[in-house]
Amino acid sequence: MKNLFGERLQKLAIDAGFTCPNRDGTKGTGGCTYCVNEAFNPSYCESSSSITEQIRLGIEFHAIRYRRANKFLAYFQPYSNTYAHPDLLKKKYAEALSCPGVAGLVLGTRPDCVNEHILQYLASLTKDYFVQVEFGVESIYEETLARINRCHSFAQSLDAIKRTKEAGISTGAHFIFGLPGETLEMMKRYADAISGLPLDSVKFHQLQIIKGTVMEKEYRERPGDFHQFTLQSYIDFIIEFLEGLSPEISVERFAGEVPPRYIEERNWGLLRYDEVLRRIEKELEKRGTWQGRKVVK
Image 1: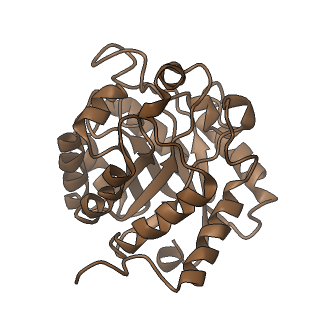
Image 2: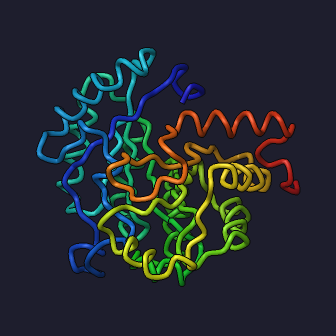
Image 3: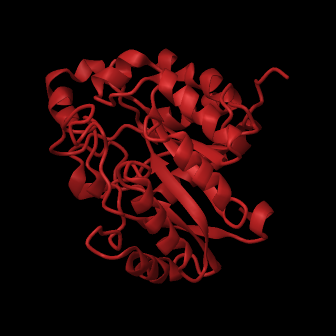
């Protein structure tokens, strides 16, 4: 963002009231087995408020922590934010872009929720605004995607990422480490797979078991199916993972952070993400290593 705008930009999360095809019955019901969107939304992000109001409250919310941010990205975060009638999508996006200080859009969505019409429209917006589509890919393994009720395939993710990038739109992806059935060795293979994708950025989260989810029940019944990271083992994993990840892809996030009331077991204590990031950076410096060190050129 500093390269593009000459300054820091802050994302403002927006709940536009959308849903997902694995929730509304189009492809499935219940959503992803790990998902409670409220656990990831900031307090100002409420679909009952207008987009304009959410942006206003978001700017106030971040004014204390990020005082240097003068420009903002409207981050349509919960659920699938390209999954609605095109006229409604355009109306929602236009409202966000009309707000003072908003320099672009980031749209969190699923790989099966983008079509050529919406990609063409988003491409047209890139003439005046920054636009990124952030896909929830979550896993590179088809059996994992089926188990967590994603109701889309990794092949669909590959296709959607390629088409979005070809349309000239910044393209991001989200992955979760620790999903049921995946071993540490399986997770390490993500690095090669991700490096081969035409991505501008990625986000990584460690799996957190959220209270009341289908996955919580699954975890109680079959804990041996889950690779649970301690903080140090996660840092060790991330360091090794980064060494094999293409340096051309920006890493926006290394770990997830959920309010304590939503999680039953907090094996990292109450550590905030900023501290996790600091420890990862410190460990990189200590080992004298960096992202892409082991990537063959």
